[in-house]
Length: 419
Image (cartoon, rainbow, N blue to C red; front, top):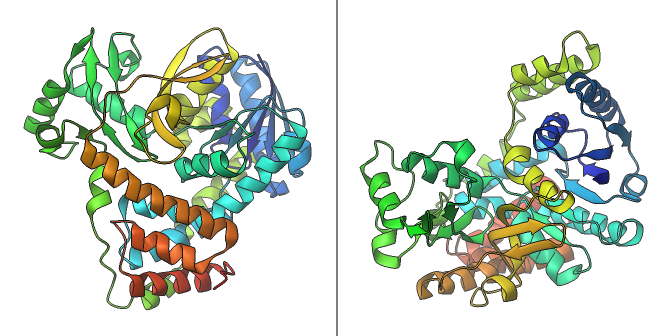
């Protein structure tokens, strides 16, 4: 039983969807506390969530508050969905990184600059008002957040919840003729290690038999291959969707500063959100019908709820999350690695991994060095650390362009970077 589940970023229009997914997995919860600084949107989401719970017959008390300390006090688990600055800041950040040619895995990392300081502050509050409660981290880049917590707030048990590994698992299952609802069966396993969004698959087994080569072969003859060809033959691993982007050097627009400054929020997206919040408030349709019309997200089902199920029921769940490298993969650089884990009431236990290729470990050292500098840049508001982080990443840029990017990011988002 979860006594109090606190959701940071609780005014998200997707926040209510955790309720039917908790019910589907049989995870009981006494209270869901929605926390957001936007009181008006929070009331709309809170009211809709209560009606949704009543509609589907899930027994839970839904509360909301704009005070973070109140929301976190007494929490037995915390889910983080916040986007500092909201959708506008996220979209502006993405626009700037594209203008400077940064894409793939590296593009996710820049979100550290706006999100991490706030999340670390919330972690400090958790140590005071709900010590020991796990922080289930969904805000990107959650893998770097896990590394930052391991280095700066090790007292907060942080568990990353990214749906990317489960999506890749389902894709591999499809190649083998296994439907998504059966990929959690005990006789089907996908090994996984790496960074948030950027990882490698060293082994797939079915019924205890290694079928990795068969997965690679079937993907190669499919009409639309999902994985890059040749990796398994040369390195013995299948790259996850974004792994290849770690080697792709950034190519900026002709005038990246001018392109970055041209950002304008998408009015269509804002209109969609406004319409959705208005529908939450009007109470003219059954909540379950509104969810179908909105379109369900898969985050809770694939990544967040399995963790809660393992921690708060008697059902062991196998999923993918950041774990200590000394327990999971000692050869991997840094303090954490995203990998397969077993989740029970006792916590997380990494699932054993084969020895990774030396070339991947060498690349991981470079990427981890870049991420460590990015953490320093975000926490210390350091321009020099940001520039060095971009230069260290093989998917970013040379020093002069990195300096231009840092200055543009600082100017457009008012980061207040110190030289």
